[in-house]
Structure formats: C-alpha cells, structure tokens
Image (cartoon, rainbow, N blue to C red; front, side, top):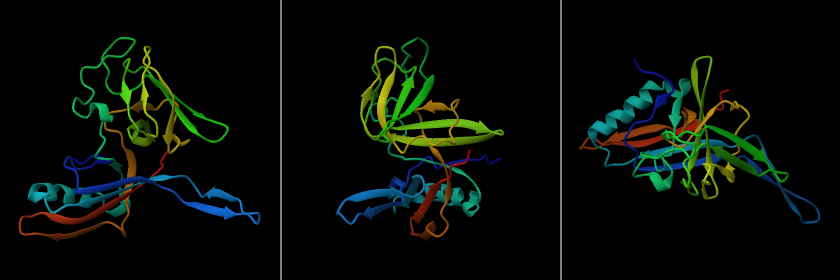
Length: 228
C-alpha cells in the first residue's frame, strides 16, 4: 500500500532547480534610498526536468509518482537530489561516525536552536554531532515531526560552512530560509535525506512524449506546503 507523504523516485531527473521562491519588492523613497519589502515567507520550489536518458524503467517510476499524487491532492517529500547528505559525506553517507558524547551517529542532532539577530539574520545551532563534522555551504538540514500521526517535514540550507567543535556543536551558522514557526521545538533536526512537504504545481507539471527507447520527457514541479 502506498504511504504518504510520498517519497520521490530513487533515480533523479535529468536536471533540477531547487530554490526558495520569494516574493520581494523594492520600495524606492523620494530621496533616492531603496528599501526591500517581502510579502509572505519563502517556500521551496522544486523543478525536476526529466531527461532523454531516463530509460523505460525509471520513466515508469516517475509517471507512477505523478499518478499517485492525484494532482496537488497529496503530499510528497521534495528534495534536492544533488545533496542527500552533507557534501563532505556524499560517498560515505555519514556511515561510521560517532557522536562527540559517545554512541553511533544516525544523522540526527540531539537538539537544535535558532537565533534571530537584530538585523533579522537566522542562525542555527546543532548539538550532539560528531566532533569535527564538516558542513559546507549548500548543505541542507531537515526537520521531521508528526502531527496527529501524520509525518511533517521542513528544510533549510546552510549559507555558511562550519565544523563541529570537540563537543559536537555547530553554532551561529547562517541559514536560509529561517526555520518557520510551524516547526515545533521537539522536531528532530537531521542531515540525512533532508526534505520538505510539497504538493504538485498542476499548471507547471507536464509529462511529455516518450521516445523510442522508452524515455519520458517533461517536467515535475513542486511547491512547499508549511503544514503544522
């Protein structure tokens, strides 16, 4: 039986765009100064373009994935295929690491906190990591929890590199977007296969032709849903 939120196909698309969708405006003043105004909060927008080298089996996986979502009716776990783990651990997938305080590291922090500075910078602290763990710009941190028995996910991206200290702590790292208030303090922060809840964007998702080798063309587009 299919479970939701639905995981994306294991085989990635031909190309991908995965960026926060912002609604920003410039507000010029008569004296020539410019002020920025944001409307709402940034939402992750994933655009997955299927390539001609998918082959028949992987094309079937992507078609079934879209079918099972019933348009924008069901959730899926949107992610950046390029960074399922921190960049320094793409090959090892975090295997064999131990927490600074002892015990095997399963990809999750023991606790986390966010600080919003006076100039509205969002800074993240992660505790309970392996000493010397390397995080790179562009790595993702996921947050998972349940609400009424239903899985919930959230996602942020590191805008700075960092290394965990001897106590397994990374602190003061700039992230974008900020962790939204829908994320409860008890959510688990993790570095393995981070994702966010998404729904299909129906007017942009379009599965195209199939070539003679069985490869499906088209594009699948998802937008984050900040479900509490």
